Image (cartoon, rainbow, N blue to C red):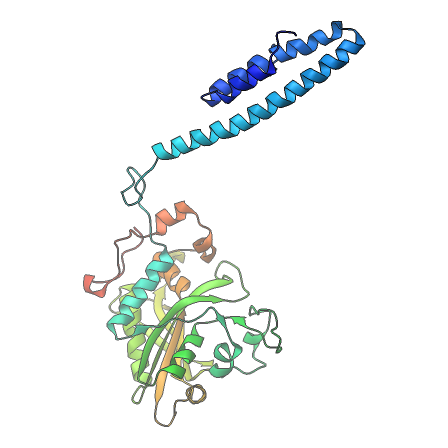
Length: 360
């Protein structure tokens, strides 16, 4: 016990060059057969007074050594980490060797396809906020206060503001149409892809999903223009030149007259196939812009008229690429993305021919 020198051990700890050397000192001093452990075992052979003084000294030495080991461990660990980071430094602009190629998400790809098609027709892309005023999301679109779409079981509202009004997560991209008509005089020709939000969740619905809407306002727009525009879109998007398309009367508060758009399909053998067949599949809604909506935006309905349409991006992507469950779009499963995703350079363009290519 007389040979035990705490100051010498602490000096060894301070000069240790590596975590391994530090561990060797710890085991030699504090291990089961360490020098400090052996010294403490010898306390039993001393008289009570000497045991008290020697025990206090050894406990103090043990605390000093433990503190020195902890401080040196932190210091050496930091040095090792810095050396490792310096050795592993990489240029992020270089290609990663042997790494699997990334994939474009089907939603992003579908938006690009839709933009490419309508871009060829002269449409510009417009965007707007996800959090909207009631006026833009409902009132200006001729949606009355008692309409079910305004109820909380269908719509996400934010907490009340001091004046008692509440903002809303937009339930469609139509507010962007209102904002565009309020700030831009006709003629107007825009499409609006973006996220929307509704209280719904199952295999074909999600509380957050994507829509694309189109709007044309000028002096000569009529129902024939609407039909021609959407027929050409459906045939270009699905890559079927003779795809049957039909328009059924419907009702939307913001269009009059309104129409649902169906495309031809067959379900022979339980398999859905887009194209000529004995069945129909609804894919989007459309109609002539309601005169009251034009008036709400400061556009004279006696001078201008227009048409609008909208569709769910996930829905048309599911139909085109055979994706059975909408919820899988948002599960962040890399296996799913590798199967349904697209290579980064597969940029949609009508110049390259039909956009039907399937997932890469």
